[in-house]
Amino acid sequence: MIKFLDLQKINLIHQQEIEEKLINTFRSGWYLLGREVKNFEENLKNYIGSNHAIGVANGLDALRLIFRAYLELGLMKKGDEVLVPANTYIASLLALSDNGLVPVLVEPNLDNYNIDISKIESKITSKTKAILIVHLYGQIVFSEELKEIAKNNNLKIVEDNAQAIGASWNKIKAGNLGDAAGFSFYPGKNLGALGDAGAVTCKDDDLAKAIRAIANYGSNLKYVNIYQGLNSRLDEIHAAVLDVKLKYIDNENQIRREIANRYLKEIKNNKVILPIEPVDKKEHVWHIFVIRTKERDALQSYLQENEIQTLIHYPIPPHKQEAYKDLNHLSLPITEAIHEEVLSLPISPVMSVNEVSKVIEIINKFI
Ligand SMILES: *Cc1c(COP(=O)(O)O)cnc(C)c1O
Image (cartoon, rainbow, N blue to C red; front, top):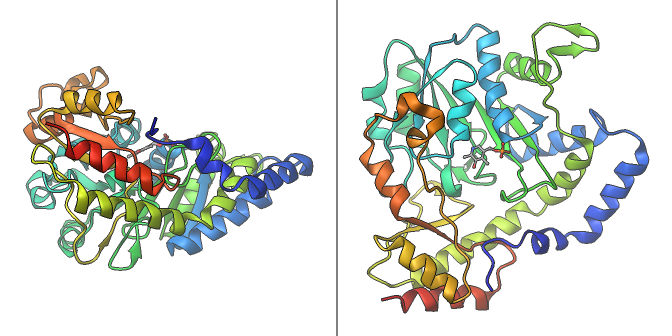
């Protein structure tokens, strides 16, 4: 069976280094807000090129904390609107609604399934304060035009970078393209911890300070609370593991790119629509490799019969979820079509050349 993602294998590549770190952290007697988190934050900051990196408990919290900090700093208020792609994982919306901000959904582009930048301006109102871009599937989304729209309308650009650590636009890394970015280190992400973990990167000093405080009960100084904060900290043990894996992320992303390039060149079946290759300034990291077909369910069963595991990212769009009853009435035909047609193929740094060949061969034989 070719697994969609073999997490055990992925982590065992670094077995010795990770086990050493785990034992050292265990024996140190220091489990929170210590040396490991500090090191990892420093290395992440340097890797991304941002001014600040703050370890937090998970990716959803990373995004929640960014918007919460904008509220605390008086740069946004409840009821303000944030533009967000309609085709995304629900966490992007949860980070907004949890803060009393209104998600305004923008249809994607059929080329890359990501936010259609040409549709952004028509959604801007006097209440719009930010654009939350999502580098979905590890495909970078950015352009000069997007930057101009944000600048001309005085909008913050926040990146949901849960799926695209290491991706870049014009040599600038995802996480350093906008004003602030949320990262997830959920085990299955390109940089995965051994449990929940996340981080925020940002440019502005005051924003970083506010986020750090809010994530720690609203306190920058023990027992002195300036905000009604949360407890959303990155554990030492996760930071220690992430710091090992961060050293290898470029290598591992490169393997993903090689697999994606083979899929793009060698999958030839007129029932299957492939993602488009990244153009000029874009470097993707292919967190997932998503194809489209009108016969999605048939193709998925066929691949399963041939011992190839696939997943669907995602079967139900956020605006059709019971959790967002107030959005259920929206008609977003492109988003809805995508959710009925997408299928994610196996891709990971531990997939062998033979496994990739088998996936290609089996898909090409699908009739
Ligand atoms: C995984 C993910 C999140 C949430 O991250 P968690 O660490 O699971 O909380 C947010 N947005 C996107 C696009 C994701 O893929």
